[in-house]
Image (cartoon, rainbow, N blue to C red):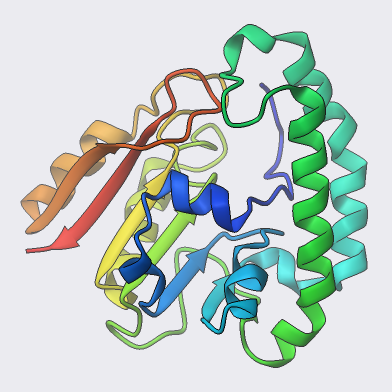
Length: 225
């Protein structure tokens, strides 16, 4: 896949649970969703009485404008997937139609929740690599489909500073996926892990029960030693 910008696609609570191997105990933590986009994870957890703070530069817009941005790029993204179905694993999403229906359902749920959630401080307009939160404010930070995936658009230094900032505000960080848009492992992954190890962090590559990009079923979990 080739994209010239970050696209406004979001994932569901069930996808987050699979991508990040989230346990019931994890979902009870104070969670920060970084570069969260129009995901429904926040809305679904809020409906269960839990609270997640989500941030994204996309939140400078109103919900309906975010939906329009999704509509503008959807045909191109799904068209690229349709042109190379062999690059993807059709286990969780059984086919392209199911994938599109899921993405549409997710953003519709997000839009329904967005105005209220923004007023309540659950959706915050912010962007990496600087976050306006206290040290260790969150028990768990999650970054889905941004770092590593868009390696062609963001530098190694941006990745490093972003990871360090998320580790400043969170006790633990999980990132998924670790592949670029072309399905190859990001060239930033190995040097980033070495750098974090040298700074005293513990990094672990963990297989998860979610795979859309072929070979993209590994999460990076980073904790403080």
